[in-house]
Length: 119
Image (tube, helix red, strand yellow):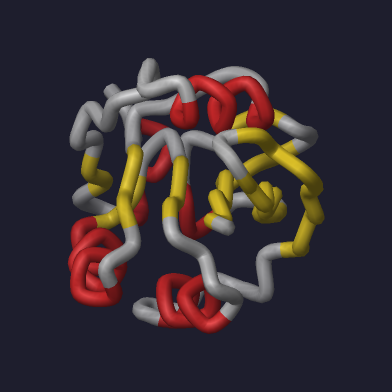
């Protein structure tokens, strides 16, 4: 089984990972989503969320944009990072499973400009 976390807001992929409303965790078996759970974002503190999601057994994280520090921690934990995603969270997870969703490498460089992530 694999777990895909999607940084989301109202069921849609959010532009900025750390400031998302929640994470939708999709559990996958045999390349099919078998269940999902929405977990509120416990708060944005540098380095906290990648470790939090790792502790939950997440294998893949999907977001619109993400800071370089978070990407580094996910990489160290062996968690695949997909940035540049948008639209419906479940559709993004399904696209990933079909091999159609690829990371654009969208990195957010400055927190005060979080509205510019993904540009």
